[in-house]
Image (cartoon, rainbow, N blue to C red):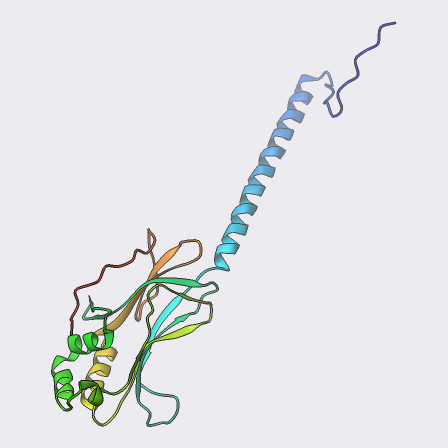
Length: 219
């Protein structure tokens, strides 16, 4: 007795009608293509969601008033991360008239670049210039990480009777846009932006590089 070979499981049994078999094959091919397309779209959507949840947004701001009392006048330059993810800050600098100043002793270099006459007048009023200038708080910003919702101070300087002329000159330069800040920062996915005072960050086409020491004004 001769026995037929069993048909493999899942094998499509032909109907004997050519047009019907062709239609079934085309439908199966379309279904597979749609499934692949939907999986690809879903993958892209998930990737976009992850990037959106890790998107840093650095804001550079400045002000001229303190928090402790109405007559507390403090010049401040701050950075804050208003985005949803951490920011890796690779570069930060003050600029005066769109020219970067040397980060080494940034306050003195910025003061001299914008207001040399007032700086010299205040510095000459005391044996030690910083006795007249007063206490200046600064922080190294370059190569730091700023978490979502975190802010940090780049420079803070209070107004006194002795430094009033220089303080007022620098505040006027700040308000007119002569003194500003620039930062280059990246997300954890190496998407990078340039942030500048009074401007929205601009997306870069390459990652931030460590800037070389710039030739700004020196001591």
